[in-house]
Structures are given as structure tokens and as C-alpha cells.
Image 1: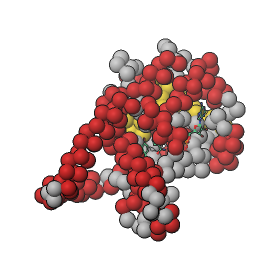
Image 2: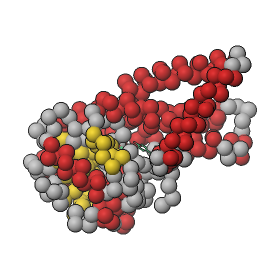
Image 3: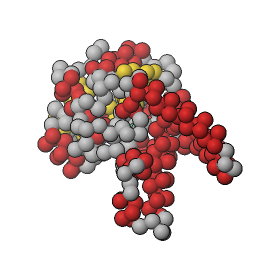
Length: 300
Ligand SMILES: NC(=O)C1=CN([C@@H]2O[C@H](COP(=O)(O)OP(=O)(O)OC[C@H]3O[C@@H](n4cnc5c(N)ncnc54)[C@H](O)[C@@H]3O)[C@@H](O)[C@H]2O)C=CC1
Ligand SMILES: O=C(O)C(=O)Cc1ccc(O)cc1
């Protein structure tokens, strides 16, 4: 069955972008939306992020074929519970959370018997809120679906077709693998950015004005990432604890090896690593995926 009515719960960057992308690229699909914040609901209505802004989560989902939960991962369980009584039996429940195993568990607990197909559009910016969304966010970006074992295949096909209409490329993998891969490619890079910007601001002999004045180089890229939403990222690290700690262990070992190379004057080790990483950056650019690199923010 093709999806005709989509309910979006959470009308910030991701929810708003889905609404705008549907309006621009799949205008035959009707959208309703709800956000727990009255201010966000008001702004969402002013910007026309969805066809209709509902006054409750239940009202938003009552006729939906697909519900997409676009709230911080720590709020997925509560958002799912808030739609439980009004959810049509046939509806697909999905989400856009940055971590997948814990979200899958929270959704399955809140909505037993429903078709749940978690997803993660690997597309975003450091901005958040109802003014941050834009229609092209998902164009040419991966959307990773993590259907649980035995998931309804028609539902997976319908959800894939929905994301393809918004311009995404689809990949399917299990939730545990997703969480390991994203720990390395997204979560730890954010943790490193939060750390380096925090360390610089803590240094007593580096004044705040010097940090700003000399931030034209690599530090500036880190400050963009470190400006990402604090609630969203708190929830990502708490929910993807196992994979992040596993990958952080490996990262610390590699950092210690570099520390040793610097201390012992081992230029060969440094040069070999930096050449390898330069080749990785170049191959990302050759594949037309340079937006996925640290300088990720796009004008919109
Ligand atoms: N920001 C990014 O670049 C990306 C974020 N994600 C994921 O998307 C999700 C949403 O992130 P953003 O849109 O960036 O956040 P956002 O902060 O822009 O929007 C989240 C919205 O959810 C609302 N909300 C919170 N709890 C709610 C509830 N129980 N019911 C209804 N509304 C509720 C908030 O009021 C807020 O307006 C997160 O799970 C995040 O991990 C995924 C890909 C990229
Ligand atoms: O702004 C950036 O650099 C990002 O990395 C955006 C982003 C944040 C979280 C995701 O789960 C996916 C993409």
C-alpha cells in the first residue's frame, strides 16, 4: 500500500525538513504534525512545515498510514506512548533517531503488535528547532532502515519508497551494526569536537577572545559541530553507550600511539597516518560525498 497520510511527531530540524520535503517533492502525500512545545507548534504552522498542526499527538496520528517520530532519542518511548491509543492498526511506525537499538526497544515496548521499522536519515546540521528545517536536507543522502527480524516486508518497501521520494538513497542493516558504524562516523567525531572546544575554553591562559580571534583554522570546524543541540547529543551518547565506549577504547589506543610517536620523534609513523587519512578524504570527495565530511553544513 502506498503511503498517503504521514504524521510527524516533533517539528524541529528533522520533522520540519520531512514536512517541507514532502510538500516540495511528494505533494500528493498529506502531512499532519505535532510537537510537545506550543511555541514550536505555532512556528511550524507559520512556516507551513506540515499541512495541519494538531493540538495533540493522538489527533495527529488518527488517520496516518505512516508515523515518523522526530524527537530526541531519549524521548522516543514517551512519544510512542502518546500515540498508542489513537494509532490505526495498519500504520507503520518509524523514527529518525541517530541511534537505533535502544529506540527499537523503546518503540516495541510502547507499541506492541504494531509494524515498527526504525530508520536514520544520515543527514543533518548543527541547527535545531522549527526554523532550521529545509526541503533539500535528504537529497542524495543515505537513509538507513533497521527493520527488526521478521519485519513486514511490504512495510519496509513502503517506507523505502517514501524516503526515496524525499531524495534519499536507502540502505538496510541491523540496528547493532548501525550503532557501531555511526559511533565511529558520527558520534565519536561529535564527542571529540565537544571535548576540544571545551578544553580550549577551560585553558586559563587562553582567553575567550583569543579562542575567537584565532579560530580560523581546524578549531573553527570543531566549533560548528560542538554547537549541535545539547539535548539531542546527550541522548545519543546515553542511548548508544556500548558502541560508543567500544569505539572510544580503540580511539584512545590510537591516540596513545600517536602521543608516543610525537614524544619519541617518530616522524615516519605520523607521516604514514596523515597520508592515509588524506587519501580517505580525497576518495570521499571523488565519490561526491564531501558534504559528509566535517565541513558538513550547507547553505540553505
Ligand atoms: N540534528 C540532526 O542533524 C539529526 C538528528 N537526527 C535525529 O532526529 C531526532 C530529532 O532531532 P532534531 O530534529 O535535530 O531535534 P530538534 O530539537 O530540532 O526537534 C525535536 C523536537 O521534538 C520535540 N519533542 C520532544 N519530545 C517530544 C514528545 N514527547 N512529543 C512531541 N514532541 C516532542 C521538541 O519540542 C522539539 O521541537 C533526534 O532523535 C536526532 O537524533 C537524525 C539525523 C540528523
Ligand atoms: O552537522 C553535522 O556535521 C552532522 O553530522 C549532522 C548529523 C547529526 C546527527 C546525525 O544522526 C546525522 C547527521
